[in-house]
Image (cartoon, one colour):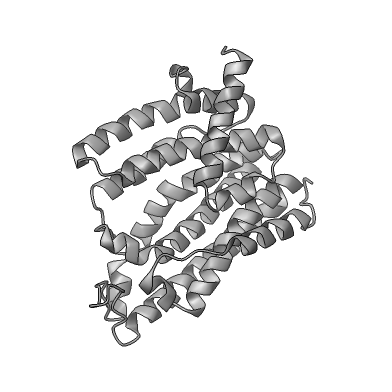
Length: 296
């Protein structure tokens, strides 16, 4: 067992990473009580490490090698006590039922990115979203630790997974131009073909709107993502009040962003967009004031 001072320092490092890099998630995480807040910060810090490898500039084989190392660290963090993120994550997993194997799914998804995988159908894309974001939903559910067992817990895990898919679909729409510049296309080929559209840049560097066809694709995908939110947010009544507030804040920020994209698809054709800080604060405040769930 690591010394408590070292564990506390490790959690502080994870909270620093979360505060500085979790531009949207931090607003929800800070609504949790200390024990769960530090645990979710450890989960985020490890997930950030994995994502950064996938998004980095190393050659493909080096990225895959580093992802293999991150897979080992994240699924068995106790074997790496000299690494502060691993130390904090191992402590969190001792205190709470965090399904560390889900980090392996996150690595699977990042490996798809590194290999330049593209998606023919919605089902293909949803499988990717479950790897990179549904996994985070299930890891977060372990931190929330609702008093559910058996089929009730399985239902909650499925809803957490669906909420992760909703958030990732929102990310894909938000980052559609930036991803194309990096050689990545996530929108399903079937959907682009359905609207007679392709992702290409216009002379001014924005995405070519193709006489409105791209806007129709974006609205179509946004409507699908909204359906995933409708399903995933059924998780909230199953959580205690503070966990539900955390979940609602994170989802609320992304859902409001999705609504703005659906209203004006042109905003993501020009640049990566986000909510102003004042709107994130508002969403977080409203989430904290929501009525308690059945376990509140």
